[in-house]
Length: 414
Ligand SMILES: [Zn+2]
Image (cartoon, rainbow, N blue to C red; front, side, top):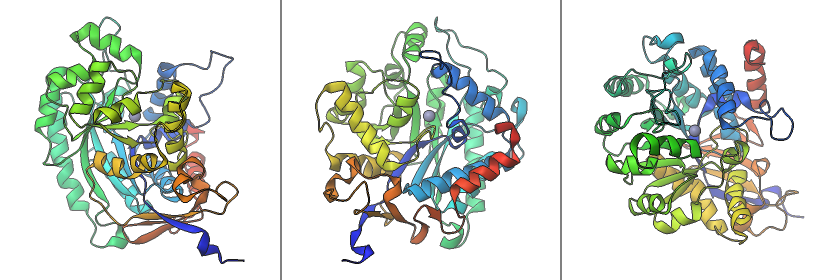
């Protein structure tokens, strides 16, 4: 018999490049209905807005702490939080970036790296004829009024986060950085795009939801005569700092443009399956020159291994061909692709993975992306600190208990 540690392999820490922490509230609560009657993306979005409507800074921090702790114990060592819930009810601003600082405190408590993707969200979308739609009551909480309002808040937020920066690694020093996001071409008009790009710091990442649903493409074509990718290209936004999230429904020209610009593409395979978005052309994008990253998005699943696996499974089901992404490419999407997408430098973050479990015994180490799950993540080390061991957070305990406490104290979500 060999000792238990001989079954552990050290794996560079996976990076979760796309998250909306509060969507965790919806897990296991959106699937009712007979065949074909469980709703679509747009009815799911109404449920998501209902959840967003009730959150205040204290509740947001409690919820995000539970979600970030779940990410940490499952092996995600960094997260890009695509954050647009900026303001209070009816869009009244909080006095001092309370929602954003709540997320930063939650990440430091969980010991996970956070790139806070401060999102510009200005309009309620485009209707199918391409006309701008008014913000609804919940969406008022997302909006800064115009792009200049977003840019001013973004600059002030950078200073506020710097002022909150703790002194020691144990308190979370160095874990939180700032990035930017355009919610989508549905929610941000073309005239605002250049203003946003002009407000970015050197090397600051920029993310955008891109062509997740055919309706977005149809509305964009009706309004502007180009695809969402074409619209971003016309505004000069296709660069290697841009991450396109989902990129599900693309034309051949879109794929070529995103690849030639060396954009990052954040695939969220378990979310795209859950929401019936479709299977994006990840292989074609990678072949064209784009860098693939992975994200858990709505957190129906929080597990780096299942995200890697779902990317390849989607490719296989769609193409009838195995090995569209080699196991090493899946691992690179979860690690290097995520670091690139979020503008993070290389680091020593890592996880220890059990190669002798019910799932992994007998697997070749290089093929763990096709066999392991988060249950095989034995330990997680971020910024030199062991933050999790065997599914339990070393400081916060069981993340499931944190989430149960949140729903107990906030019965409106139960
Ligand atoms: Zn998203």
